[in-house]
Amino acid sequence: MERLPSLNAVRSFVAAARLQSFTAAALELHVTQGAVSRMVQALEQELGLQLFNRNGRFITLTQAGQGYYKEVSHALELIATATRKIQQAERAQALQLVVNSAFAIRWLMPRLPAFQRKHPNIDVHILSSEAESGAHAETSQLTIRYGKGNWPGISAEALPVGTLMGVVCSPELKAAKTLNSPADLLGRPLLTHTSSADTSFWAEYFTHYGLAQPDLALAPRFHQLLLLAEAAMGGMGFALVPLFLFQAELNSGRLVQAINQTFTSARGYYVTHASGAAHDHKVHVFKQWLMREAEDCYQQTEAIWQTA
Image (tube, rainbow, N blue to C red; front, side, top):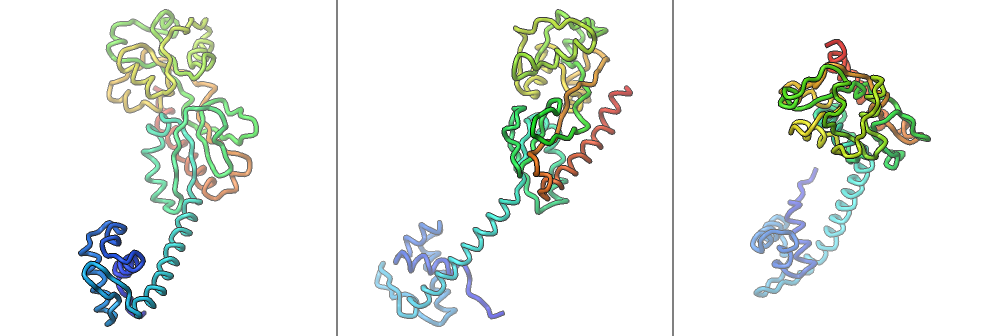
């Protein structure tokens, strides 16, 4: 291939020719005026032609410069257009994934680099949302949602994580309170995770153990699981959480199980998408990877909790 001049030199020449000023070209290119001048001089030396007439601070194109400017400016426009097209095509391939912050931070993000290494051509865009509605479930998008999987018009497949629930608190709170069974939690400070009054984890918990649900109208209420866990670690009260998300805190002792009893919730995490999205290659690939990772997580963590 015939040797081509420096692209930076050509860009400097085109900017200076269009603006009729080395100084203005330097401002546009975010370099010094001297750098533009040197680039143009190097280009002239390489071509063996004078491209500009110089009269003090003023410059005008020579006849050769005018012809060269017309050709190379068009070539740069073609390069810019091709670059925009390929970037837009790449962005169109991005997978839009909506997920709540706790699942994203504690479970998904540590695993995502491995997916990117295995599938470098699939760009994953993470959108954080605590909502359990299907508002984000578009055709080219996956949503990881918490619930019972009964969302009308939405394809939902259960991830085998997040159903095992346990009561946790700070070590200091456990030491100060004697708890042996779920009934001992009645009258204790309970922290709730809910986005509305009727979706508290505690309702399912006390029903599971055949206990009357206490009045939680004045209980501290948290919309995000991470905030709920922080409050529990701070000693504010007892929190009911999916245990797999807080394995690190339990291992370090920042959180402890308030009582040994755990239960399997009817709710859990689901990967959902609009009808027809499964035919999208990137959706199919990411969903299959997600299911395998969740199965591995279940075998390593929840199975351990259930047999402990």
